[in-house]
Image 1 (cartoon, rainbow, N blue to C red):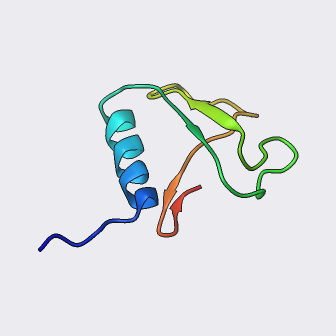
Image 2 (tube, rainbow, N blue to C red):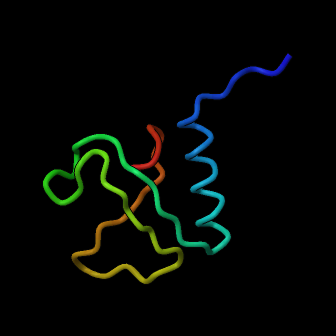
Amino acid sequence: MTAAVPAALDARSIIVDLLQCGHDVQFRVRGDSMHPVIRSEDVVHVEAGRVVRIGDVVLTLADCGLT
């Protein structure tokens, strides 16, 4: 019997795998921790391998998930 995996875990794994392979990704965010810059239900575009500059908003993989 295969255990069901929550959709959020599947999405996180797919996003991480795609970025590690050098692909850009787009996805809908949940939560308002970046409000007013990014709001819950906004679609964000993440560029893989881009040099981070001052003022950039970055995506981080933390123990609690993507943040």
